[in-house]
Amino acid sequence: MTSMRRRLLVLVAAVLVLAGVGTGVVLHAADRADRANQPHAGDPTVSAGRLSLGQKSRVMFVNAAPGPHRTAVASVPSTEPNGSRTASSLKCARFYAAAGTGVCLQSNPGVLKQSNRALLLDAGLRTKRTFPLAGTPSRARVSPSGRFVAWTVFVSGESYSSAFFSTRTSILDTRTMRLTPSLETFSVIKDGESYHASDINFWGVTFASDDDTFYATLNTADKTYLVRGSLSRRTVTTLVENVECPSLSPDGTRVAFKKRVLSRTDLWHEYVLDLRTLRETPLAERHSVDDQATWLDNRTVAYALPTSGNVKSTDLWSVPADGTGKPRLLIAGASSPAPL
Image: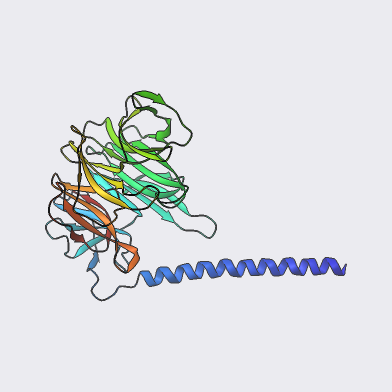
């Protein structure tokens, strides 16, 4: 009997310790979040307001500046990107929009498991549909017409530099609401022949204007490829090697992408690929860019880089797409740009 009482006491003590640890973790995370939400001198001016995807000549993005509007979808005039920003009540880990359609990827931490979901948005940033995500948000894109939406999540691993990671890329037809849960169900043509492998991963979709063609990254056998896909035929075809996170130019002739500089490292440089000649042009940015770039117009691409001295924040930079010029700071404390 005494032995049984001791076991019960040990069990109760263990439960109390675990409960205390769990509470401590939650409180510590809340304290860190509170500190991150405190504005600092020199931070951008952010005020609450109503946003619409129908607004022209503006850039929308996820606000990364500290304060109550951190992670909120915000907007600035494209002619004054460093001006005061207007923030909506919508908060996202990743965001993109085109032709009155938006997508917001959210990740909400929990004590035991984080909750991830994709929100399909109308022009007023109101949620039309919600879709559960299989992992941590990574990339998001909307086709030029607004008909198709794509997102990529990490099912395992937390970055493309992880030793082991897997992704899942989904495409939604917003007209029919038909969801393709994984691009891995598409047929792969590699080097002119049908290709099958258990280690195939896709990420970083970018859409052409014909509502059928798309480009993406395919990873297999420790190599990455730019693929051209067809939604109607449900096929992808490899084009060139060592291309990640492609972004198609507005005129459909070039792809901006990140190219791994050294094998098995997290060092990438930004390039532009001419789709007709397959000629690559290195851009003037010399920092490692781990992002899916966005074309502001046919001459300029934008991308996120970690904020100096703050690994939890990013700034948006831009650079000419022809390899000339030099990078310039576009929007401090921001990510996921979407030019309207």
